[in-house]
Length: 311
Picture 1 (cartoon, one colour):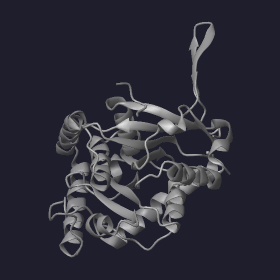
Picture 2 (cartoon, one colour):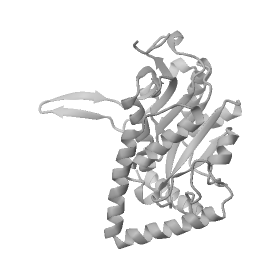
Picture 3 (cartoon, one colour):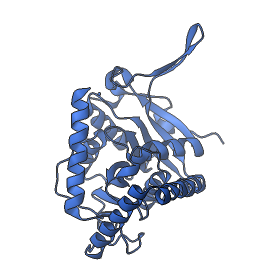
């Protein structure tokens, strides 16, 4: 399926620079700590961006599973805005451009969506593709967040993938995109952020910071994070206050810290940007926790779905 059957351009194709990195963050099966939602909103809210084009909602979105919001204003309806899945041209904090794919995960036509993303990547001769998502793990918030790295950036896998399981997991649409890109030898890397499971349903600012750090590591792009870091310090201070007044929470965090440290004491992988404490408990315990989480999610699902910039 050609890109034009799913994707409508908002600008002239000739005006989009070639050879840029592509960054992706789409929300779907899980977004632990609201990591993807936070970092994608942060990029669009804080950086100069222009919409390049959008994917067709009527072909990709299950409206009954993810109903758009409409505002009821006393006696009439207003403000109808369906979810957006779009490609943007963005400038980083020092003015370097990159392509940014963000929005909802398609409900339908994953193969066609993957084909369209690959065609866009080929059309714009992207230099690399980097994407991020986040899952809950039994890790303490008092230790650095860890990542699992996939793709064909061997340097990043070797130095930043702190957990390398042999397991089956439910795929996301971006997994399929990565798989197809890997097949045709495009440069692609995916970062899975490993979020403390007891904070998975919160808006956890350190998760967004970690996402931006990993994207910077893979692409060299620079992002402003001062606001997020301040929010993170405030958030962690509140968690520590709760820990001091909640004996069960304190015991949980202490147990996780002990398992975390014991795992890293025997773990040969030492990410270059993390301290020696590391971010994970034992591999068997992580796998067991992940299987429980995935089983719960499956049960839940079965029961319910020149430049474009102004000068």
